[in-house]
Each structure stands twice: as structure tokens, then as C-alpha cells.
Length: 559
Ligand SMILES: Cc1ncc(C[n+]2csc(CCOP(=O)(O)OP(=O)(O)O)c2C)c(N)n1
Ligand SMILES: [Mg+2]
Image (tube, rainbow, N blue to C red; front, side):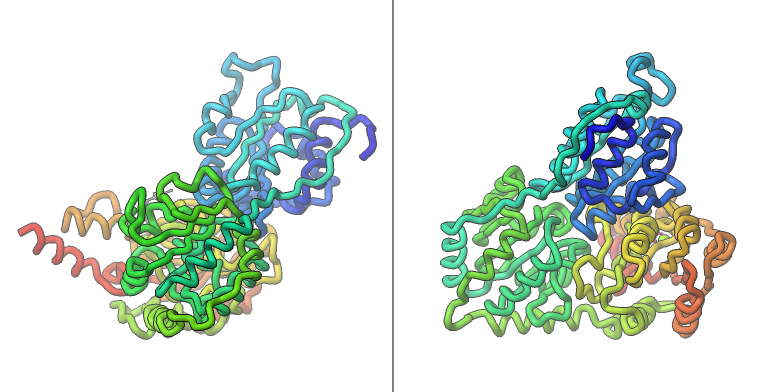
């Protein structure tokens, strides 16, 4: 690019464009006016949000869907702390994210100026890297490093503080070329060892997780699984990494997973853990495998060397990204006779039985299993399904069949309030895809304000809100641990259908199962963002048990 003098704000926005950013999410602040001004003429779609938490989660959703860093701009102090849930999600979910924060002028540092905070100290432990740009001439270097840091090894969030007077300085600098994500490849010797292990196995299983996958990597892994008739499971909230309806799919290691899948993993004589960390949730509170040395032979493939041997010792540890690893699998030859083919078919049959919505019978006039069956029939298979945290999410994870890459936005970090901004971000990025958010009465109001953003940008997302009048997940834990002693988990709720209409969207109130189908039809036909406010029997706490049953079991155990 030319050596024409530019403001720091212009240099910054030019860097984003060079590195391929096409969307950014923000809440404006007077601390970064010069960057806002540079966005005015830049070929980047700007989404202005109602809270920095929402903006950061939208940017995180961009990172999850595309593998490229989501871009978020927030103001100093409270803007930055409001954005912190998005940073935490990007950290735990291994998602590339660049968060730009307006910062006080350099000459005022260390006086606790208006909204001054030390970003390195505040975000030091949840961000992958934090920097504070002193000199506008170093923007090309530091922004380039931010893109590399966010995407390399185990991806994560980077925080870049931008002193406001730095953004108005004029500098003449050269721009670098676009970043290219750094691949780590398995060696030929490692692939040969893996082949030997597979050829010797009687009942192997794969567990796919983490980030750094792509549409192509999923296709390649699918072909490998087909050729080897290998049973494949996915980690907690990583169901988009393998097509659910594929004959090799054995299910996911979520909260309350299929006990038959857990048994299969425990019994297997070779576990291929690819891309993930098998952390607390998928490992069922670290009970699935022994730590540090699992009794089952483990092959662990991870893009970050620091994750190998951190919790689990694997006799074969391969430092490779899932993209490079799946490419290498294409060359591997299956054994002549595959000993485990029947087991793989049986595992898939168990998955199908486990996820059949007709197999569960929740109480109440509105039954979510039937609504899920209807959603599965009506919505396109590549619908992007979004959720935050709460028991409601189990309905999506168990009964929706995620068949496509980039079709799931769900926080492995269990952050409430994620589903709505994720859905808004997804629809901004992919306007032609159907986007569905499943939410609870608690979860929704943690970032429900972003419904206004959906209305502002004309994003016809469908929100199915399950209202059981409580923070149900916590109530469930209370009934198990302290039966009958309900403490701080009851909610008095607004009329969420009226909320939708007040914002300029479409609202429906659903009290009975048979009202769901026509309400969904009207919502889809409205062309507006829509909330389907479903009144759920609080007894229907999970697909298979009731609050009363949990309480009685706990009381019986205590007497
Ligand atoms: C930000 C955040 N705060 C608190 C929690 C703890 N938490 C997990 S689930 C849950 C209740 C969710 O309630 P709701 O959305 O109504 O769903 P339900 O469980 O009732 O289906 C809470 C408070 C959390 N995971 N994240
Ligand atoms: Mg609830």
C-alpha cells in the first residue's frame, strides 16, 4: 500500500481489511472515534449492538463459524468489562477473536483517568495476548501479530487497547500482506504409528472436538471414517464436526450423554481424541479416562503442543491441527478385514434410538420433544442452531441432528446469554441460512436486548424460548443436593411475545403442543425476528425426569 500519511484509526481499519475482516461488531465509544470514522468508508459490514457482551459474543460466533478472528470494538473501562464474557467464551471454546478497546490518551496514563484500566492486568489470564498500542506506526506489526496469535496453535482471544490520541496521530507506514494461519502437520512416522495401532485394534473410537476444523476437514474425516468403518463421537457442543446421520456417528459427549456411548468409550481399545482437550464436561467430570495415564490406549491430536500431556498422557501425541491431520488421513490404508464394522453400525443404531423424540414423554400441555420433531422436519438441515446455557439446551443437543459444519453455535464454556447474540451474528454473516436460537427464560434476558439488533438489521431469526418460570438447571441441582429447599431460583417473567412485538418483531405465545406448528409457520411467514414463547411445565426438567422424581429420590437417599 502507499506511504501516504494516515491516522492511526485509518491504519488500523486498513489492517483489518488486509487481513480479510468483512464484518465487525461494536458498541461505539468516544474513546475510538477515529477508528469509527475510518469504518465509515471501509468495505466492512458494521453491526452496532446494544451491549458489549452481545457484540463480543457475535464476534466470537463469527470466529466459530469461519475460523477467522471475529472482530469486536468496544470502549474503555465498562465497555471492556462488559465484553469480558465474550473473551472468556473465546478462551474456553478456543475461538479466534480480536477485541479492540478504546483507551485513554497516553499522556493521562497512571492517574486513574476516566474509565482507565490496565488491560494487561485485567484480561491477562483470560486473553491469549493483551497489548496496548503506544505508537500508531506499530499498528501494522501489532495487528498482524494479533491475527497470528488469535488463530495459531490453540486459537483464542486477543485484546488490543487503542489510546485515543494514538488513533488520531498521523503516520506513514507500509502495510504487510494478509496473515495466513500456521498449520502444524503430523509427521509420516506418526501416521505410520497410528496406522499400526488402528490395524491392531479390535474396537477403536474417535472423539472429535476443539476448533481449527473446516468444511473440508470434516469431509476428509468423514471419508476416513467410512473407509475404516470407524465409530465417531463428538465432544460437548462440538456436534457440527461430524454429520449426525452418517452411519459411523455414535453421538456426543454432552451433559447427560447416552450411557451406551460412555460404555463404548470405556470399553474401546483405542481412542483417537482429535482437536479437543476432553475437559470437564465431555469427560463427565474427569471420570471417563484415568488421569494422567488413561487405561485405554490414547492417540491425542491437538494443534497446541502445550495441550498434549497437560491432562492426559497419550502414548501417541501428535501436534497437528485437525485440518492438516484430516488431510493426512486421506493417505492411510484401512486393514483388509475391519473387525469393528458391526460395532460401529450398532453404535449408530444406539445413537438414533437415543435421539428419537418420540421415545421420551415429558409432562405438560406443551411438549418440547414434539416441538423438536416439528423443527427437525420444517427447518433446513443446514440451519444454524444456537443456544446459551440452561436445561433447555438439552433439547437441541439431543434431538436436533447437526449434519453440517458451521451449523452449531453453543458455548462449551457454559455461558448463559450466548444464544441470542450468536444467532444475530450468524444471520448477519450468513443472511441466506436459517438461524434458530433455543433459549430459556433465564438465559434469554442475559442478552435479550440484542433482539433489537436483529430488528434493526432485519434479521428474521427464530427464537424458541422455553419458559419454566425458573433458573431450571440450578433448581435441578438444588432438588438433588438440598431437596425441597428452593433458594433464589424462581423467576417472574414478562410476556415475551409482547416483548418481541414491542421491539418490532413477531411474537407468539404457545401453551399447548398443537399451537407450535401454526405459530412457527406464522413466524417464518412474518419475515421478522420472532420469539416463540413456550410455556413449559416446570416438572419437565429434563427429557426423561421430573422435579418431583429428583426430589423424592434425594429425600429417599437422605432418610
Ligand atoms: C453467565 C452465567 N451465569 C450463571 C450461570 C449458572 N447457570 C447455569 S444454567 C442456569 C439457569 C438457566 O435458566 P434458564 O435459561 O431459564 O434455563 P432452564 O435451565 O430453566 O431450562 C444458571 C443460572 C451460567 N452458566 N452462566
Ligand atoms: Mg428456565
